[in-house]
Image (cartoon, rainbow, N blue to C red; front, side, top):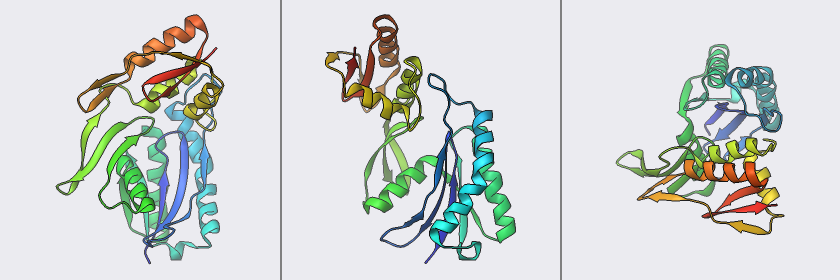
Length: 236
């Protein structure tokens, strides 16, 4: 059995995972901690990196304890190489390389997007999936072709996750546990439906016009919206 300890800290969420190559239950442990900022604000690289420096060693210890393992049980170390925020990424890279020297373990730099896809593929046991990859910074339709992952469609401006993050800041919602989740909980109480622009160009999509439109309405009519399918539901 091959066991890898990985560190992911490309944005405000910091996680340490220990995984194996076993078919069943590949995730052995995965403690996490989120940098929470005041409602209506975002997170900046420097402050986010400080958060990661403060919590990363504790999470590594928790991951080992939860897995009932010690450094000698780890075969390799992995870290998010990018894309992501520079400062937070540097924390993960530095700690991983330091542990590599101390524990004498090989290091693997992982592409953030591929890491998401591969873990999803492992957990679902999908053989050759077409993936809708949606996150704070990415909205892409991806599939594996000719020995590499290829993008068949994507946002031409901002990601849907970033759209929700920015709108949550406009209406003063917290990012605990996440802006999109909090928008959805508000929207469940809504009773009005408003048509909003949603642009599709071939396999590509656009969300900047939708964000501008809903932000304007929220500031003038004081309504709260959530994106769902091709509409946004509002809470008066």
